[in-house]
Amino acid sequence: MSDIVLTDTFKKPLGFHVAVAAAAGAFAGIFVGAAQGSSLLGIVVGALLLGALSFLAIEVLGRSAEKAVRWGILALFALGGFLFGGLPGLVMGLLFGWFFGWFIYWIGFNRYRAKLVPYLTSGQVLWYYAFRVICGAIFVFLITPILVVMPLSFNAQDFFTFTPEMLRFDPAGYSLKHYRDFFTNSDWQQALKNSVLIAPVATLLSVGFGTLAAIGLSQPHVPFRRAIMAILISPMIVPLIISAAGMYFFYSRIGLQGTYIGVVLAHAALGIPFVIITVTATLVGFDNSLTRAAANMGADPVTTFFRVQMPLILPGVISGALFAFITSFDEVVVVLFVGSAGQKTLPWQMFIGLREQISPTILAVATILVVISIGLLTVVEMLRRRSERLRGMSPG
Image 1 (cartoon, one colour):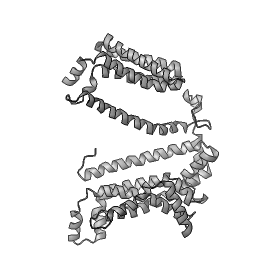
Image 2 (cartoon, rainbow, N blue to C red; image 1 turned 120 degrees about the vertical axis):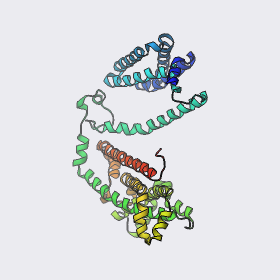
Image 3 (cartoon, one colour; image 1 turned 45 degrees about the vertical axis):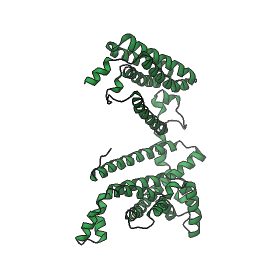
Image 4 (cartoon, rainbow, N blue to C red; image 1 turned 90 degrees about the horizontal axis):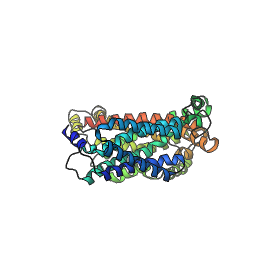
């Protein structure tokens, strides 16, 4: 509590908090100005506005008027957003107003040091927050394309852009027509059927071969372990187009080109590296004395594996299986080379819809795949934490 009181008592120098607020306003102004047709104007207006608000809030009105000032900033940004962007602008204005109202006082009264150790230098504090800002910016950059696709899948029109009705949040601009098309169109359903048939079988093969390979390569007496490991995980390193072309020429010679078996084997080859890596990571903390104890008690190697080793490495095996399944379910390049029209999967159908038909149903399918992938990755993270708890490690 004493740290919080101390940081609220002393203000930062005038030039510091005004400059930081102005920089934050300029950064936000880039996006607002771009939406209005002039990024430069947005930078200038944003910097001047936030700098002036910071000076007024910290130097003129002070700590006692914080609540009123924050409500005033919120109302100001909400009104500006509504005037320039209607209802969507109002929502964005509320978000910007809430954030900047908090940010000005957070900087102005030195609150950013409240949860940090007091001996950190200014440079260390700067890097502490700069690192988090960089990570957050990367996260936003990666996640924004996914977030854009989801609302577009509910577009009532056959467009790949937000319509005026959608931007006004008009219910008439939204529809489930693309989802209905996906579940009623024979081409999409056939592609879904192929994906559901191919991915689980490829996953089973990946798990079987990958787990055995990981266990074998974890033994110190195996010769050329590093070279064998490099060969087995090469499908993750070699460009996919090269792997696909190589599989095409090889499968053509042995009669697997254009068959379900060929597609399954190709997808299994792509999934095996993920299984090997996750199972190998799980085996790092495995206590080999348990297998030796089982052998001393008369258990054969197969019984030892299924009764002793497998339960302990199961989280890693399941994690690898989920990664292999996602790889197979989302893969398009290899199936274009080694498959035929009869093995058309969902990603292949999406590629056709984007290249030939420009079908908005792609957006609905992409949203479904994103939801499935998020669910599977959530399971992977839960299993990772469970595996670390079993090995006595911290989940962090």
